[in-house]
Length: 268
Image 1 (cartoon, rainbow, N blue to C red):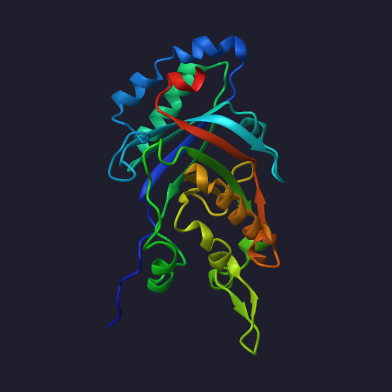
Image 2: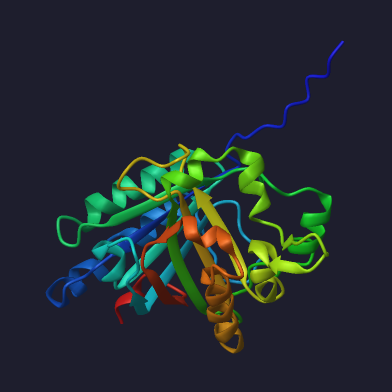
């Protein structure tokens, strides 16, 4: 007899970031679009408001602060004036929101949609869960953690040629035969953010993602006092001497925004 206890990799959550570059001449018309009514009809709760962590059916409004280009060119994100995050436990509300918002807002601006799914964690046993997630910061109301960072990325073809066991080794520190740490690995390089950065990752439904799309859409929120920590963590992850994994990473633009309470505030 054999067990049949293979753990599921089915999507737990669906989400998208709708990125809008709005010309000055179109701002009034875009501000008047019926996006709030669409969100209400789909039962999406505003993440800006106080609540019990991340709502099951959610919407967020993010207003641009800055954006920094990276290895993967992406003018749609780099020049976005606003980003809307929408999420649901099922795919249909996300797809309907993106399609209807595109209809309401087009043809100018033409939204860029970055979408993905949340799947069960791949490399997280009990010890790693307790280290990285057991005491992680949860989503807070907008005034408490107003800063948002959107960082899409993909892994190189060489990464995807590795089997999952080899990929796993890049998450942990590496040591030489004398027990001296040689590399921190992803886990230790990002440790400073565990207690203060709310983090979320959507994966492309297909792994690796098709050309022209991202493997991962990573997102962070934090308080004003913790913005330097976000940049410190990013610098540590990008340091291939500390974290060799990043030799296989290509990033899109880092987009920084500010969480606002309403659709209208994006264009005020």
